[in-house]
Length: 224
Image (cartoon, rainbow, N blue to C red; front, side, top):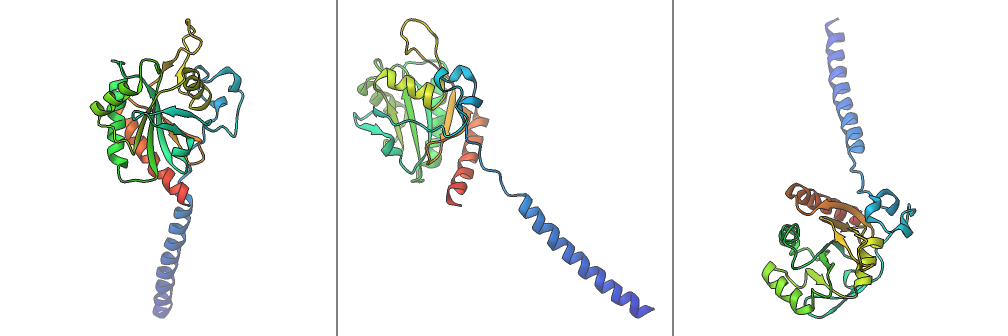
């Protein structure tokens, strides 16, 4: 009888260890992180989406562009080829949300300074006013590092179309100029396939923290 209990004890210990291993394996499988969503126009606030693409439910990407940065250099989608980047819309004379957004973009710049995979892109919604010299002055004031962060100006229609048909990031106020824009506080996380992977409130520190977490997740996804 004593021998039976000894054998049973050994079996019970072995079974418990095996069960723990199996449970840990299942837990690891179930714990696999879900990828970030890919945002489509049909599922974004329609105020931010041009009516011509509000029906689009798949395959949405950022359109080709040709704009001018703070150094007078032409910037196109090729400058962001094979890069993850964070985009926003602003104007240099804005006294409300823009200074906060720019400060937060500067914080992100510090975090990605040595990361060759990640860049920043800020579009002016008042391109006539935000000339190259004005953008250069603003860039110096805000600590913009040229190799990481482009502030861009250019044709207003193109910027409007990018904002409404690509980044899904601005509202139209319908007054006077057909390309008038009311930019939002949104930062957009764009992957290497030029897809939108996240929207974040650029005025909220908590949202910036989440953006940086999602950026790390996206980098892992890209490598896998």
